[in-house]
Length: 194
Image (cartoon, rainbow, N blue to C red; front, top):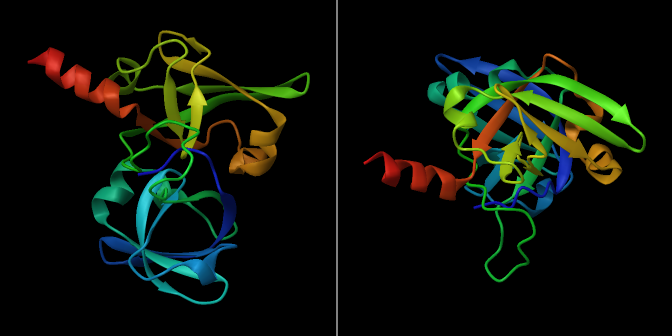
């Protein structure tokens, strides 16, 4: 379980295809603190540490994960959002994020407005139906509040701290992003659907 509060950013050192799977190696600031088998959310996708050294960690990515997320499109040098699993008894400041990506969207707009940035993301219908104004949506692992819902997208306002401390500082219009809808909304939708 994660909070959607990005702990640090890291850089992709390699993404090596291994048949239908891949091995992702990330340079990350807390590599020495990790244990094999530990969970780390990379751009909002929960992955398991399979190897580590003093400055980096390796993760195996399954075919389904490559299909459902944007991780297969990472390039050497790409900046990624990182969050370790939350500790029991720790502060909880974002929203419940499982690290289970539901779909991907695309950055439609990322433009400065005063000191802040306006971020607009396309939302596929299966995600859009789970969103409400002022609700939460995890975008590449970042817990964000939906400021406005259009018919096909969500608009978010990014404060300077979030811009500086996440991969959004290098994000581009047209970039694919991972989306995780609020887990409570998913449960309610399933119950109401029955």
